[in-house]
Image (cartoon, rainbow, N blue to C red):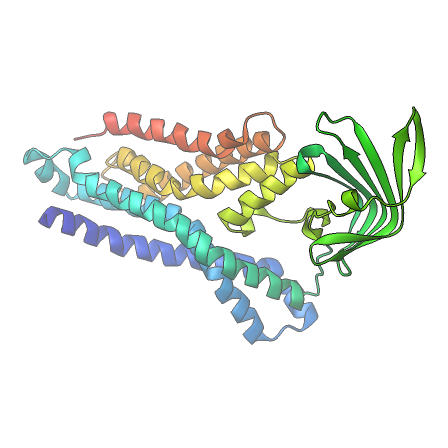
Length: 356
């Protein structure tokens, strides 16, 4: 038990030190990317500081895997260099058994990182983006043109030339109704439609229906009219970033895309990333354990170099697989989980041949 406390004590100090350093670097990078906009718009320093504070949770979320990789690699390499691990091995304790508490800790940190992102990071980052766009006078447009939306499993198809998000109104609206076998039922045309509480109210509308092999114009069929219950959010311009919403909101957004018949590969890939990224913590711990003890000289520089190399390789592979997932080359679930599983296998191989 004393060995566990000794190891964790060294780990925690290095972890928080590298964490603070990484967060500082990411925060300053974000500041430098926007500094010209702040200066040109005359943004007060207090507002800039507030934006930086709101970015800290997001930067911390990014920093955890990097910090834990460096902390684990440096701690174990330092113990190797000082021959302290040799004494541990001489007592019959294997490297796997000695580092097992770190693995358990990384599992809990992975779960905590997911909930931290879902409950804290998403909200603070949303506020950061909103405030930053406000001071830089960047407006987000939700109006949409040439909108096509499917509802009721494809039994209703909306086609509108323009959607006004401010007034929640559709213009030049066509609504195609289909029977249970997806055969033609009728076509509704309206000059415009306004959202009222739970359905669309149409103006200057006509209903086309087939009769004796010919299409005839009928008065508005209210049984069909009251089926127009697709909410205005469905017609908005597709501008939601899955990475910036909670897992539950991302799932609803993906269902909305599928319901509307729109591509959802990219959204699904980002959705799976929310889960897979958290378990990167466990991956980097296993990787660091396997990489430790490769040299007794220049432990700090070697640990830093190995950590940077491992992180770069992981993110390059992740970038490639995510790009392939977004274009449907591979299933979205593979876009994020394949790099994680690949590095788990590499870590297991390194651990098998690690010095012990």
